[in-house]
Length: 449
Ligand SMILES: Nc1ncnc2c1ncn2[C@@H]1O[C@H](COP(=O)(O)OP(=O)(O)OP(=O)(O)O)[C@@H](O)[C@H]1O
Ligand SMILES: [Mg+2]
Image (cartoon, rainbow, N blue to C red; front, side):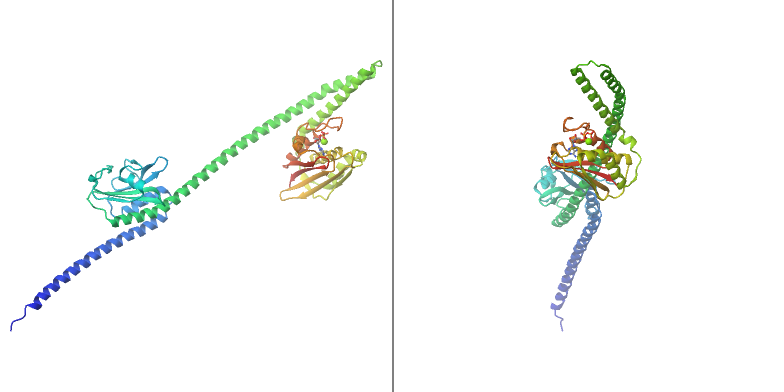
């Protein structure tokens, strides 16, 4: 019996089919494992990227940890210099990166020029299969047939380009394109973040430098002021001290003329009286100036002061004025505070005297002295119901000889408040006033605890 031919043919066909299937499977397996390798590169790159802090580190990690691991032979990463509209080579892999983080002969490409410039301008990636046919191709290190360029974007703004070349024609595929786009997208947000951080650091450094400069400037100003202040004090002291002597002589001889000359005309007597008055006033001014110039030097001993003693002494020193003006002076409850006794007494006395002296003609003078405790200092207020003053004078009255009235209306040399200011500043405090014309005045000062 003859064996039929049919099943044998069938077996051969089956074998061939199986071989084809196997080949197909092998190819699919190869493709899949390549894909898996590329995904692993992207995964590893993501982890490396997380640790990068500066823009430089980020672009070099693209070259080192993405492009190189994907097996590309060449790659350059460009970043946009927006001020100059130029693409600048920042990192590279392959022949352009001979050693460490260095680019051989880095070039710049104007926006719109060459393949890289076009990709940056349009914001669209490109694959060129044969660069010998593309007039835009710019020869950098060596000629290569294939090129792929992918923009690094922040929204619609291009901040850089990843560019790779290959000696083989039609080397780059859509898959390469997807990979580079993924890498560009990952790098983009990280670059923007690093740039903001770098700007912040620069800003902070700039601020710190500015503060340092201003502090030095201020220190110089303070030492300059201190010097001119002490020069001025020395001058005031010398002037007031030396002027006192000739003034005494003038005054003495005027008195002698007045006493000896019996036949002086009425007019002459009047003139001599004016001159004597003038000399007295000048003596007072000089005494005041002398006192002013000594505040810092004399008042250098600080101790805890008993406010009751300070109030009583002030009242007793001013008892004649208080009685004469029928003034009511009230000192509120006060806590002991640190200060120089002579200085604080002078301060209390000057302010109380002013509050009585500048009283309103229609009212009996009333003076209240109050102390309030604050975090770092005590605040004092000397409040009166006197003539008050307009706001424009609130600062002038603290200046040397800063008076608002003629000597005929109110006696005084205009030094009392300048002395107060000097004393308060010597105690590390401040002095100011609030007042309303015809209503009254409150002088405030602080004393550091
Ligand atoms: N409590 C007050 N009410 C209204 N005006 C005042 C008061 N205290 C001071 N002044 C005004 O400020 C000016 C300066 O005061 P300051 O105490 O320095 O000088 P003075 O009292 O005129 O003279 P001195 O105190 O040297 O004898 C005064 O001339 C006065 O015009
Ligand atoms: Mg005064």
